[in-house]
Length: 585
Image (cartoon, rainbow, N blue to C red; front, side):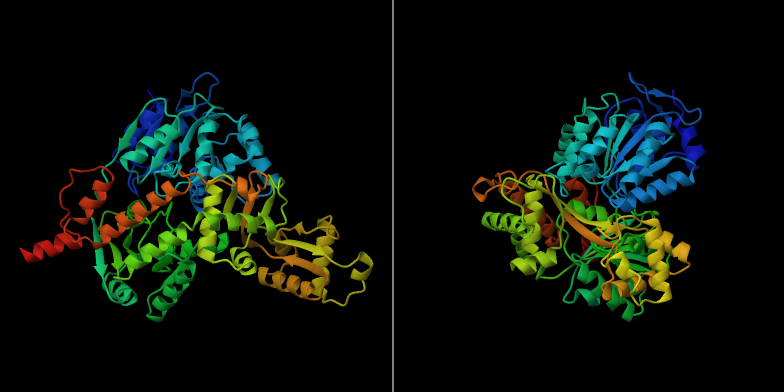
């Protein structure tokens, strides 16, 4: 029998497993498809990393060994690039070979990483669910020694879940390549309905669920009605010391609230999906190291956070679902000490919920209008367009087509879920440059010595500069020319202003990729399942969240864990409802 505890101690230096980890590991290690429901901070990654280190690949059946590092790769599907990078870095620090594939890597880099997986000693390959939709990747994947598949945030595969992503459905197709590789599905939030759906969608051979109690005795759930949410936010942060996360719904608000806190001498920063990856990493690291006390963020901030001493998680805006709220709130107090999850509530939130429903599900005719507008915008002819990919700016598109932004974003998302196109939000694209003048004209231009040095370097190291925009590596240029990134950017901007080059800086860009040829409007169909039923589920989830915020009769923790099927919990004694009941006794 495999000694998983020895592997844990050898690579992770922990004395023992956390509750339920050992049982989950033995289940997946014996080759059984397994679904693990562990609360935020429950140690989900250990549940696939330890058995993967013990699993050797065989064409007939996986075998097990703890001597050295056996062959056989664990394919990890996770939706967040930051989480991939973080886990890969931690594994590499422990001497374990791990790699990840994400948007922004060049074709050469991707090919080299997959070569290492095929011919080297890689143990973990992290990919996004969208990567599984690439025919080129699936072709390479078939030749890899995949011994196990781990699916993080597995609730995303269920249309009954709060964060359904169509790309997750591709995982079941990938299983066909590796019939003997067991699947470990992991999530921190799943209702009984979603639990069944996950196992069905991932083609479990038999039902097999491990569920840890969702009760957090050290976490106080509080709903705070208030006239001014910003005043209440300041009061809470001034009353409760320590690290904090403040969640809001939109990007502009992250900066506004961050500025407000800094003016009140509370150290804060902001975080959202539109930031460059380097900026995200810097902000995250400063917060983890307590250089920044408060992170004001959209829901893009959270998955994979490895910070145990968060004392407060404060929601200024009502989340879409109880699942989302429970997962975000659960990032407080992972060190076991007293912590607070506070939801700020104002009477106007009820009306805002109704508007949110209307914005998220605009009329069917509007969906058709947006579909036609996108095709016209990119000059895609009817009967053409399949597999064509276009950089997409929602702001510019809505401005040109005179469309409302929120409803347009929802329409594009709904059309993606219906399978007409893929909408990938803000991938980081590398910088590109093209020389606009002829070679003869270039030598006649009056430019500074620094700009001349830069142009000579580009001409020596990159081909095709006179015909197409060429991707370049600014880090390499800065190293070779002994300049700062700021100086390099200034030189490129000046050359572009002088019409000598076209310079496209590194940026975050959403993409629309047509999955099928453009259809005439009369053939565009949105099924009841894709629209009305989805709308009903979304409305139901929002109303459940609203009801949680507005009720003051039942223990908050009992309501939350009961939602996930845990019906025997006792009153927590530390939420606002329990506290008020104790005062009245």
